[in-house]
Length: 421
Image (cartoon, rainbow, N blue to C red):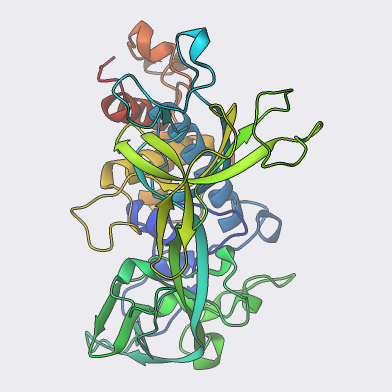
């Protein structure tokens, strides 16, 4: 798998596919099974391993930067992620005399807040539980071309925290063995996950399973793909899911005579706290309601509760799962919308400052999407320039073609915005 220590929402292998990069060469592999010659150069893991080109780590850093910049402007993460300990001020009543009232709106419903990121899915925290470690990989040649390109992993269906069997392929993740499910070792994207008859069957590509030790050596070389020992033979399979028990912590600033401390003493230099749950009011914009509640471990649900302090809270701490899902594609939690994929890929090219390793088509893509459209360039046949609108020139991403493509994508899909430049 094309991996990196920098976590990206767009998998590196998908980035390579979008740009037409040979998936074997991108993963440092060569093979004698290919009858037609392609570019001879293979990608390396780090830039210092090949001074004339970027490495996979450099690409991951550019992709993450592009994703973060786009998310900040568009108003939501480009794939669902878990937001941890997001802190907000609690809404206050418009009438000052009502500060002792429970957090309710004018209609009597629980108060609403807006999360930092839209496309809210559920409150909760990220959890991983091991389904099976050291699962054997079986390689097969589906198209009979001599290259055993398909990797299949089979394991028994596990049960979730509620004692129910796992039924969603989007909650199944695969990792390199003996890495404790660390996110940088997750193998993405997975080709398919089928759960039936008490069995989970997972398929992926052989080129995603190169032995990582061969890619991180001091003097790396192309990995012979025809040698089976150059690939890992086992993987770890995890249940990767949202645990709803932790959602919102309501906090009260210290005060005198403003809180009920249950017969005890109100804290002087600490907040009074109480846990609660979140309910979406507007999923897309991330407008949610919060209520004091207690987790019922028997029935796996929240039971309503009264405020432990006799007034509305001052601050809130949130844990939730949110992000854009392309519901037209299988396993929507795992795949990015195609337009957003292209925006991230092209914008990341504009952020790279060293050439890519690849064929002419890859080099042309790099030149195209990293071209500065605000620069007048002279040459023997004339001057090249482009006409841009003031709105385009003022965008926060930059003047490169890939940056402008990403900005146009943001403006078309940003929450609360729908404009063109």
